[in-house]
Structures are given as C-alpha cells and as structure tokens.
Length: 21
Image (cartoon, rainbow, N blue to C red; front, top):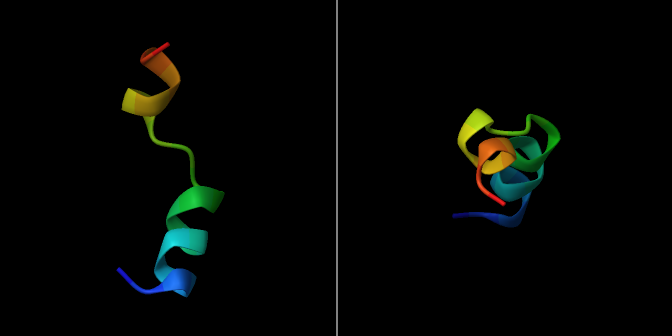
C-alpha cells in the first residue's frame, strides 16, 4: 500500500477499528 493510500484510509476511520479496543 502506498503512503498516500494509507493517509487517505487513515482520514476515514474504519468502524471496525473504532469498535476494536
């Protein structure tokens, strides 16, 4: 995964990540 792709993905928090402690 390219660095910019990780940034774009990080901008939008995933529901799974929020639910996972």
